[in-house]
Length: 129
Image 1 (spheres, rainbow, N blue to C red):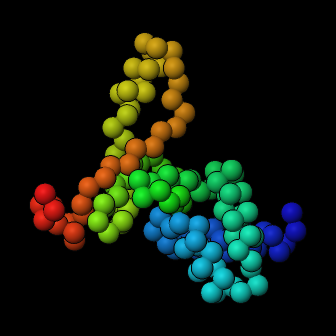
Image 2 (image 1 turned 135 degrees about the vertical axis):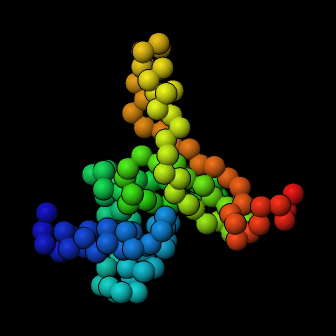
C-alpha cells in the first residue's frame, strides 16, 4: 500500500474516532471539509477497509442508518427515539447466554449487537408516554 492510501486511512480513522457513532456521511463531510483532496469514494472504501481490518465496527441502528464505532471493547448501545442520540452501555448481558450456548447447545457466539431504544434524559422519560 502506498503512503497516500495509508495517510488517507489514518485521517479517516482519526475522524471516526473524533466523532461519536457517526454515519459514513458524517465522516465524509468532516474529512472533505478538512482535507478537500480526499474524495468521498476514498472515505467509503477506507471505512469499509477499516471495518474489515477490525479497527472499526458497524452499528446497524433502528434509525436505518449505518453508524460506525471505534470503541471495540464489548458493549451495547442505546438510541433515543426522539433525538437519535446513540449512547454506549458498558456492560455485556450476554456472558451467561454465550456460556450456556457453548456448553449446552455447542454453539459458539462470535459476535452480537443489541441496541436498546427509548428516550434519553434530554428528551424526557415520561414526556411522550
